[in-house]
Image (tube, rainbow, N blue to C red; front, side, top):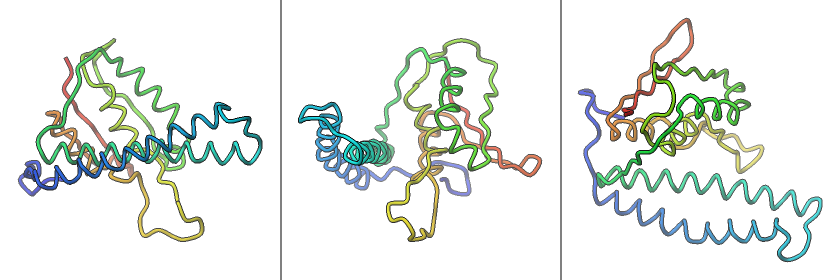
Length: 193
């Protein structure tokens, strides 16, 4: 994530443009797949039942997962060109963490992960709710095995910690990792107003 001095990686505009173009080129057919699948599930071309519906739900879930990954690739491109943007709107951080803890609870439990909100901020703060969701979801999202029965040499949430570290540093924050009582504790500090 950084060199030995702790500084962020240098900008790489050529790679950034390539990643941005790649993400754009992947998004176009992915949008069509996502839209067509939703039309089928909503009955636009007749009812889907049983295995047909289950298959379309699987396609939709995979399209959403791929869309998140493509967004991560686009963000890497934006980081390399120095153009990653952050929104500023009221965000209830405690509610967001509770929501993510609930939606990602099963995956977190499988990994023996516990969400803990350690903040002195009460109520809404000015921040970027989408980026906060991205940080937590990328940490705890479950990588799907596209080829059942074929072991992968790695596991985890795709771009994971390297992307999170770069996003958080670009935001003016920091990521920390330490061992406490035999557990790995990851900390994310981001600026809020």
